[in-house]
Figure 1 (cartoon, rainbow, N blue to C red):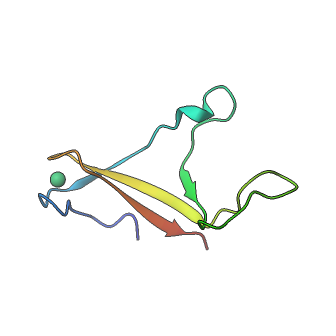
Figure 2 (cartoon, helix red, strand yellow; figure 1 turned 45 degrees about the vertical axis):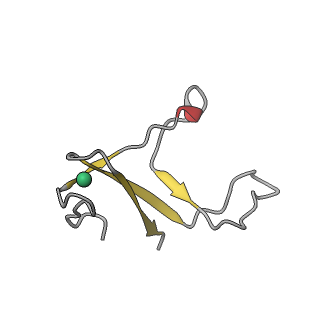
Amino acid sequence: MHTSRKSCPDCKRTLTPIQIIDKKGVGITPHGVLEYTVSEAKPSMWTGQFPVEGKVHAYMCDGCGRVLMYAQVAE
Ligand SMILES: [Zn+2]
């Protein structure tokens, strides 16, 4: 579960949840939670959207600045 406490693999400090800010969304769509799909996925012919497999949560180490991303598979 993404809410469990995680620690940095390098310096073992606690990771802080962060948001990755995607500037591509500026002016068109609001920034939201990152999502992912499989590498061979193609956009839908009808909507132009990729089929979403799940969300991606990002965490940053406050010691070394390392950013880790964890996927959460959609139910
Ligand atoms: Zn660290």
